[in-house]
Amino acid sequence: MLGAAGNAKGALFMAIAMAAFAINDGFLKLAFETLPVAQSIFVRGLMASTIIVLVCWYAGALKFRPAKGERGPIAWRIIGELGATGTFMLALAHVDIATATAVLQAAPLAVTMAAALLLSEPVGWRRWSAIAVGFCGMLLIVRPGGDVSFWLVFAVISVGFITLRDIATRMMSTRVPTLYLSALSAVAITVGALLLTPIEGWVALSLREVAPLMCSAILILVGYSFITLAMRSGEISAVAPFRYTVLVVSIAVGYLFFGTLPDTLTLIGAAIIVGAGLYTIYREWRLRRERSAFAPRRRTSPGESAI
Image (cartoon, rainbow, N blue to C red; front, top):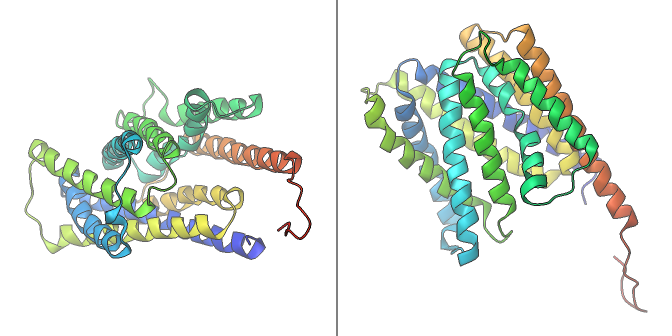
């Protein structure tokens, strides 16, 4: 049973996962200083996908065969993963980590909006208001027509691809193994990056270039492992808010690795997005509790356990 101890453990695991993802971005950005983006993603992907596929094979997940109706959502999920990775990496290569990461925090709001419009999930006026406020926060960061880098637009596009990925995941049958999806995504990203390397060219690798990519590959695996542990340890409503710790770690990584800090408007925009996201999580938790409280309970027959 999930209780206070499970929620505390889940929150810790989520914070570890977010720290791993943020530090992974720092090592990738270090690699981008001497290597093309596509080559960096390919080399990291080669290391990470090898490990994921081996784990998938050991767990028997490679034996899974999707049904005809499952192939479409799986394909759309892979497209979303490819697009999200590619566009965010382009933004990361040219924008400081904290600013790019702040924009990405609008993704849960975009997913809630898309679920309402495409999957007919009920969303009340309070959550619609939170979504609108959150997007205003994103505009404060991006500042269309202002002096912010053009490359930040790719972080916004990445939010769209993340939304596609998550909506496709919601449309999938729960029988599709998570490891199977992870392996498919990792291999697809690696192959996609390889196909793009002729555009940017290839740079001879030395230990100086390989070391940060190896650290990045290890950290992204740690992140995925701990985010899975977090979701299995605690209630989503208790664990999900700790996703936003990635912003704190990203600011620290940006300062320690590159000596950069986000400006005031970016911090205000990030705070608005986080506030809107936390409110949305709270409302979803309240609605689930209300539905659970008013759901009719099945009467038990004599001798039948009610548990």
